[in-house]
Image 1 (cartoon, rainbow, N blue to C red):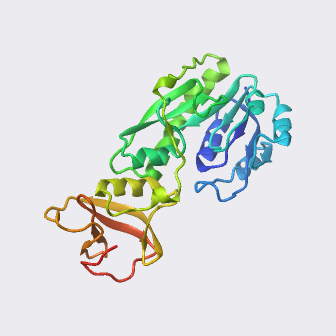
Image 2: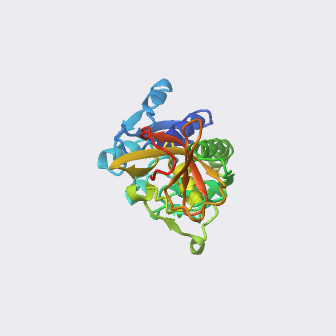
Image 3: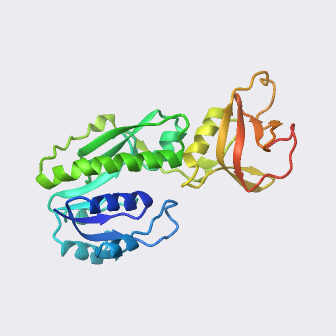
Length: 296
C-alpha cells in the first residue's frame, strides 16, 4: 500500500511515526516550515531523513508543483493528518483509493475549527477521535474509524491533546491493515446531525470577570499550552492565564466581579466572578503587587 503523508503539527509527527511502523510504503511526505500559524508546529523533515522518505515543503498543497509531485508517486491513499488549510478537488482525485483525514470530534457533530479548544471551552464531557475519507466539504466524508474520548474535569488542552494522540495511534494500528486488505467499511455521516464550529479570534480568549467562574476556568483550560492562552487586561497590560482552580466560595453574593477576595501563601489570587470564585495559579507575566480588595 503506497501512501503520501501530509501534515505539519505535533499530531502529524506522532501519526507519521506510527505509520512508519505499519506495513505501508510511505513514498513521500508533504509538510511546511514553521510560519507561526500553528502553536503545535512540528518539523517532520528530520523523521523523513532518518527513514529515507522523500519530503516536499509547501504552504499550499494545491499548487501545480505539489500536485505533480504527488501524481508521480501513483499512490493508493493520501493521509492528511494535521493540515489546517483546505484541499481542493484536483488533489482529492489524485489517490486511487482516497484521502484519509482526521477530526477530533464525534462526527458528524462538531465539524469545523479549533475542535479541542471548543470542546473544553464548552465544558463537554466527551469528544472522539475520527478518521474519515475527505471530500469537497470539510469534515463531512464517510467515517473509517471513530473512538470516543472522555474529557475529565482536570483535563486541559495539553492533556486532551495527548489523549487524542494516544487514541489515534491505536486506531491507526487497527485501521491500516483494513485499508491495506480493502476490508474497511466506511460509514456515511448523517448530515442532519451536523453542526459547524466557527473560527475563534483573539476576543474569544479574553477573560471577562463578569463571566461565571466555571466558564472562565473552561476558557483557560481550553486555551492553555500548546495553544495561546486566555488573557485579561490590567492597566493596558495583557496577562496570559495558563492555569486556574475553581473555588466554591460562599457569602460573597454582594461582592462585585473582578475583586480580589484573598491572596494565599503562594501568592495566588482568589477572584470573585459572576458566580463563585476562581484562583489564578499560573499567570504570565507576573502581576504587580496587589492586595485583597483590589480589582482586576
